[in-house]
Image (tube, rainbow, N blue to C red):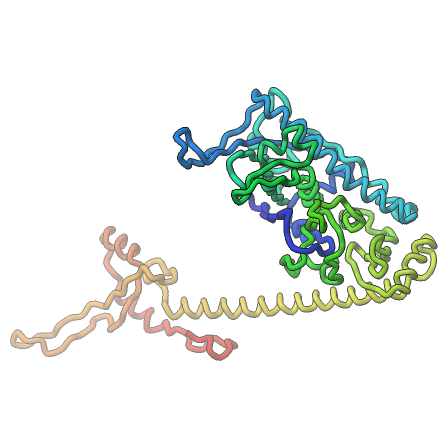
Length: 468
């Protein structure tokens, strides 16, 4: 798995919907990470898509269980059929996001305010790079986005329940990825048109809504940069800045990125989805000096929310109207008090964060200095090898200086140490090499050096409890 691949599983079903959220790789991009596909749209760049169809089975010829999978090759008539339907759904899904954002800008009557955003809502251009007789498997292309922007793996199986009930996930990283599990009946033209299929579920036959189009519509939202909108989902602290989830608890807000409606139908795109796309465009915009982006804009969907630098904030109804009036004046009047207050609060918070990070950095440096002193003190206490003069490690031996027994009438009356009584530490390998070369140990030199080498017992300003 590549370094910058961040698996972010986004399932279609969940608990009640909340407000839009950026996926973490958008909110906090890592070094060299590929932007979400909204960036291709705003730059009017084609989205290069590679699709693999894989047939899986859990049965062998004898009826036993044996999982297997194989590519559906270009020569298989099913692949062309699947590919044609899949591409039409993908194209329609991408187009719905840009068309939906345009629609709500137009309905708001604020085209002039969002003129720069409107120009960036290009009709998505898709290029399918492995369609037709000469198609290659997606694995044959580089893993990064040099050749592929979006890889889709569609697994089909007519045996397993999970393929009948509609599951998919997506993640963003070195390139965007969607994995889809489907029953072959999903893609059958008649079943697809009817948008229903008869499936066996828990030993009971039921008609279930076909999920190919709404599933891809939802997953494509992830590839554009939008996250799931389920109440109760876990949001990391660093990802909370670009979300309404900390401001509003609105399980009634409809969104394609959330759960189905009360009639169990997958939702079409809504105002909330349009606002998420607009905010993504603001987030990626290089026009950092635009008045709207820097000084705020009033929400299209909520009468008590404004955005400043792609970050939402809750305001009063009066403050919301003041922000609208400010935009209608072409940003010529004084900056509304609410926007100024929010900017000041965020600057103060950013300054406090920067100060805290600097203090933490200084503390880390101080701890590193202490750790270095501790380490050096430990090494000094262990001593150095008498042969190579490098610090002693665990792979070492202790040599005792040679002694001489003084005898009288055949009995030892005392023991003398000609070079002084001392213990010399050497690396085992050094000692073996030393003996192999026939060298004579310089005991006089070694013992004299040891007497002069007294490990420091006090190493300065170490805090209490750090001594070895």
